[in-house]
Image (cartoon, rainbow, N blue to C red; front, side):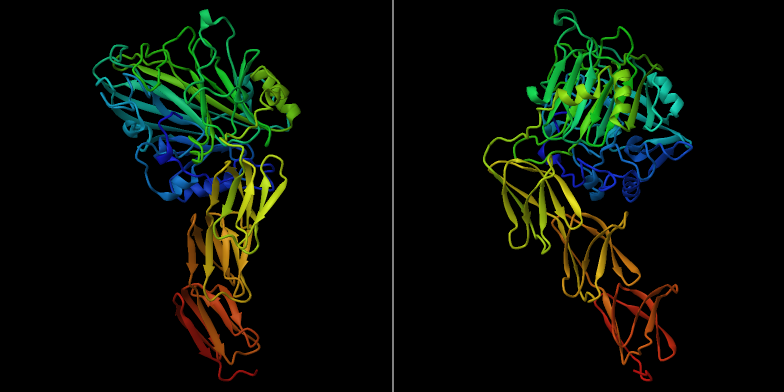
Length: 616
């Protein structure tokens, strides 16, 4: 990500980003992400023959790979997805950060040949604009198969210098077999290791009448992968060692201000960089320094990610995306890594997420000529012993070295040693336990009688019902406010109504006539009414009120009176021991006095039937 994305575009991610145990907290399961995306956009799912390796691509968002898994529907979802932006259904002004672990962009972003700024405009956020062809335009589906899909689109761009560039984009996404993964990486994959590999093949073609030249400006293919961070994720970038006089600086780490030493280490031919989503920073390596491979290791979930890409030999012209007029506009980076975090003290991060990015050389193309950039992404899950073998073979470094490189770099970016405050608006009666996100230690509790806690600056997890709101930053001298949503059920039954997760059906609590309010994390749920469910969406800081109706039978029989839906499904019954039932609006039938009586129940309506001949 580039520095133009500031507070006005920052969105709060309400999904877990530091899972300790996937089976205990499956918020980020692949299947759940698939169902979420299907609710808002058309998707294409690719799968291998066993259904173990899967990925999701979205034509409306430039054919980007939103996420993937190495373990079928219930496996871990690897890509970061911006749930809040997608669920809002609204487009942002400068950029729409939908997420995705392989998305197509083009450079340069800054400089005299920028395609993100109009000529003579200052290089600032107000004038920065992502071109629609890499932000909001849908791509056409040219081919679709079980394990691959091909997208296409045309573009017309005018760069900062006024040069017009017309071209076609062709983007193929293909899953790889186990044999292909082993062959491309030249490894033996341990038997119990979960794995997925896929490639995006990205081609741009000059369809205009004029050649693309250094004098008028060149384009590049730029692939960015957004992944879920954790406190123990480290990015690893091997580099070519040598003297700076010959190869230039090892790394550019000044995109958003110099990266603190505790967050980046250079040692023995490797750059180690924090991927924890806690400190906004970015690094890049030049063509002289970069190798055609980089990766990351998440020690929390034991996930090793490897990215490889096409890097032509002896090519040094790469577009420069720095936000200024440049002395050398073709001295840009080949690989980059971005770590998200608050852009300023007290502000929310964009995700959080971290990125692995690769770029093609500058495309000096005559009319009809093309440039192709291929980007491979691999994820491995398994024992550290097995993953260590893959890391040593592919990246040239052990997992112990990766984990130890930044083990002291666990600071939280705070400006003060003062304690901060954490509060939950509308805290419920059950209370909310507070845990230190790194140690798992319980450090406090919030409730409706004590909704604010004073805490040392740091990262915390807070329970909300049966779920956990994770990676909450408390900043010294400031108050962090959590705004869950609330559910109210009018006319609630004394028997109670279960509130279940819409996807996993995990119970998040109950509402009854004795406790008609429930605090919930924003998300999709369903509320039980007998054997029926009422689907709902809880939004941050808002109360959703359900107004079901009631059905009563005066003189109800001890045998009971069955209520069914119009289609004949049994809903529940009333009897002399419970003569009233609460139901969602709809069409029903009830058996009273030996007759089947159809009726329509409206919101907050109270219907009464009489059983005259009941033997009570």
